[in-house]
Image 1 (cartoon, rainbow, N blue to C red):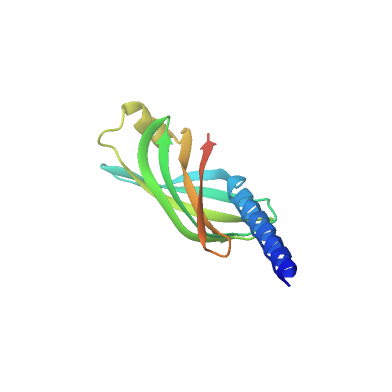
Image 2: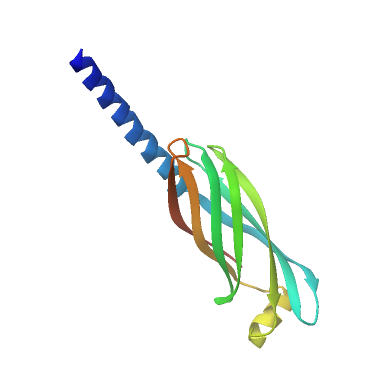
Length: 149
């Protein structure tokens, strides 16, 4: 009887380790693409953008309760933060997100302001995504980055 219990425990342990590894892989290999960035509003004080981002999960495990905290850069200059929360991405699928961003001109260089007005911007999003793995019991984080020109 003790042998059967030991074998069952070993199988359960191996399954658990495998499941954790596969779910980590889904988060680790998640791809982020910036599809577009559009100016939605311009005033004398600020400009509002919408950044269209696509998260791609090519792995065989779902990503559950994903959150993201990102820093946004234009022409390699920091312009703001963005946050996403509670996103679920099925295995082999993608999720489209729209990130609103308000950038105040104060503190920006003239080059960045002109680039935004002309629509010729290089946009970079850098940050960290966090998802729940192993039946939602463990949190796993991964750095992620995307560039759009």
